[in-house]
Length: 122
Image 1 (tube, rainbow, N blue to C red):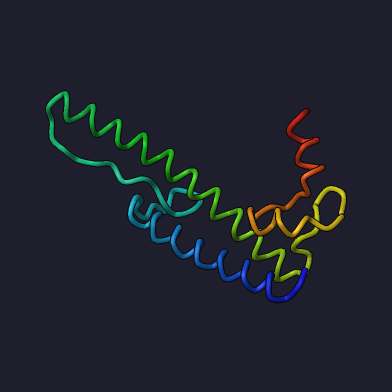
Image 2 (image 1 turned 60 degrees about the vertical axis):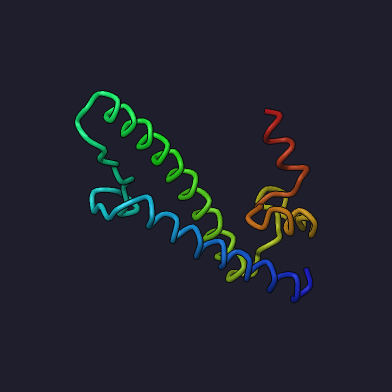
């Protein structure tokens, strides 16, 4: 892969990482008991039944959102590590180059389309 494309992808990954960290900060709080030192914030609307139901609903959504953001963050960090190691753009299963269009569309991809298709069909 050419250096310009690689730099562009790295810049995009770093921007996405920064945004995800900000988003996680907005929806979570520090918690030393968690692996990532974060836990979803629990909303406090009041003590009425409908307020409690709304709190639980919002908390459930926040927990799910937090999980998606954390997975995306891990994917980005892994892609950046592969860049640092010099093996970004190489399929982790077959060791062939991952198509440039795939990496532009999905910068965190660690597998080529052929291997990903095989994995999904099993």
